[in-house]
Amino acid sequence: MAALGFAAQYVATFDRSRRRCLYPTYYTDGDTRRRGASLARVKSLYRDHGWLPPEDELPDYLPLMLEFAARAPAAGVPLLSEYRAALEVLRFALLAYRSPYADLLQAVCHCLPGASPASREAALRLARNGPPAESVGLEPFPAQPAPNGQGARR
Image 1 (spheres, rainbow, N blue to C red):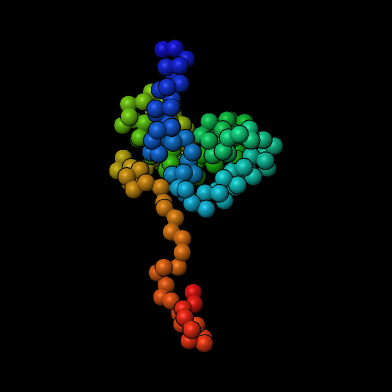
Image 2 (cartoon, rainbow, N blue to C red):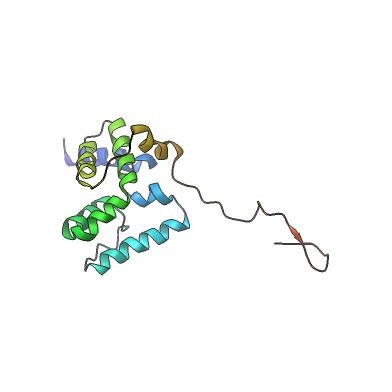
């Protein structure tokens, strides 16, 4: 396959489906404010271990996380283990998509300490429900009358 064909396959696999993305915090935090804190924590971990990844990529980009784990296994393996559920969800999604990248995720998950999810269904539960959505606002709380009786206060 020519380089353009590989690039097209990569884009079709990872860029066109939110269920097959290479950013583990997306599976755990979705597009919420909480994800920003997770990304900052990963970036800080890199810095604490003397590693500065490229500024043009998010710190949770899986190839960066794998490189960090190879360079600093004492910190990198626990980081990957923390996101194991996300990696397992991605692995199952790649298996279902019949992607050759599934073998790579299988190898990564196999190298992590601890057990894989008890069942395929347990890992896919997150994929079926999607990443968490953010609910912003105070709508569940009833409006409070203002102390002077001139309207509602929140």
